[in-house]
Image (tube, rainbow, N blue to C red; front, top):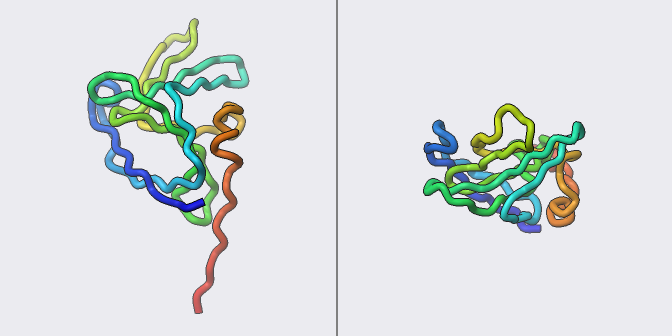
Length: 131
């Protein structure tokens, strides 16, 4: 697979007041895209992630493997629009919503339909020794 980067920035706004400066995210897998991402935690709690735009509208969520260090572990990352992600928690939770710039997912939380698209985590890149 050809590796490339995605430019991602979250503008300060209602969903995420601090925003997130522009990032160059290395994409190491196909990208899963959906209107929302449902996460079910081991204790049964449910969380829905929606992509948000600075105008307050919903947009797609994207999930893919990335890493910040060539020799480091791959990370499954969920990102939204230019206002980040909107987190909606299941019923009975004290806090029902909140904004996130992105969310790194533990392998055990990646839904099967997402894993079918992005595949398993890529291996770390070998260390090249120069002479």
